[in-house]
Length: 117
Image 1 (cartoon, rainbow, N blue to C red):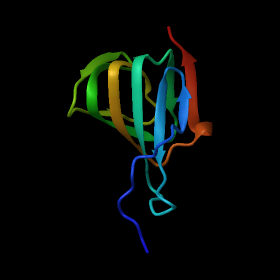
Image 2: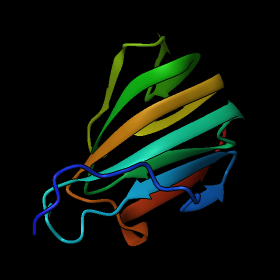
Image 3: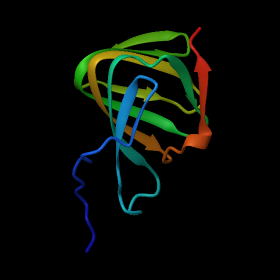
C-alpha cells in the first residue's frame, strides 16, 4: 500500500552548525525532492552553498533573516524563501521553524561550507 501522508519524524536527523533538522523519509516514493523541518535559534555560523540543489524554505513560525549572496532579507510566518543552487547563504532566527524542500534531494557531498566573513 502506498503512503501519501508522512508524519513528522520524532527524532532529529541532524543537529549541527547551530541548526537542526528532521528529514521526512518518503520510502523512495519521491525521487525529485526531499523535505525537512528546520529549526534555529541564533545564527548558522558559516556560509553554505548547495552546488546541485535549489532550496525552498517555508516559514512556519518565528522570525529570521537570510543573507543570500550580498542581500539581507527578513522572513516571517507564511513567507517563502528561495535559494537557487550555487548561491552562497546563511541565516539566523529567533525560534525560527521552517519546512525545507530541496530539489533534487540534498546529500552532504554537494554542500560547500565557508567561514563567515
